[in-house]
Image (cartoon, rainbow, N blue to C red; front, side):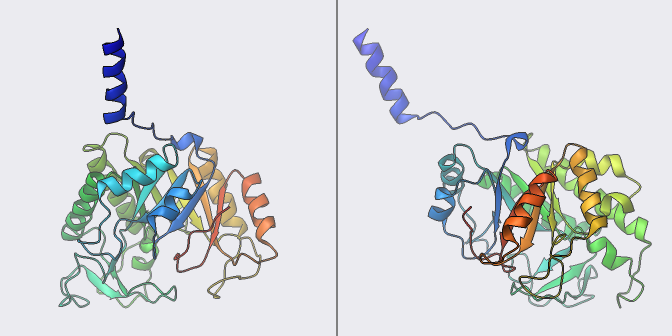
Length: 304
């Protein structure tokens, strides 16, 4: 009997029990960081859900290892860890980017995106193109191998760009066609991922009404588990601390998504000394949203 107990104890030491990951339905807090990521800081955080970049610097060599991802997830007793992936814009610091690419060559690369968030240069893409889809699927494969719980698909608002008659591109779509193509891409990536990792989580990010614009409403809702809603309480041109001016139409839109059983993570760009910070958190929670405030560059992890 003593020997049996000794063997069992040794097994527990050599093969510690794997911590069960939290479920989306139990998430009470979240955070978002894409730059200057420090693993030990992520481990110390008490957030249920974290969105981070899949790579330290965007390169292949900078990708987080599966053991590093497991450390972070286990440190929080089963943190949910989503990898950031832009599906509507190509980012020039990524491993897939070829420095010879210019708008129109390859044909799916569009004009340079005008941004002010301090992040690397990026270009609009024809997100329905098969070559671009293959690039995204390769990245999803890597995220699954790294051990991420799921993915955050950013750039979902690009359907609005490609349906804008003055975008200066070689192709302009109708708004519904552009929205339907975006939903088709989200669905295709989701199915691709879940054929390889059954419980893979899919979130989308955007502040336009994709659900309203597409004809494939149920398809979109059945594909995602949650959304990130940026700047619906403090919209504006300033990098941080815009005035409190809730966009009532967007608030109602995301309330509707929340009522359909999806997680809504609210994101605002506010300094830690902003006098409206507490008000924002209270209001977002009252609506059933999970609030988080950050710098626009998403380069620091805020602690609650």
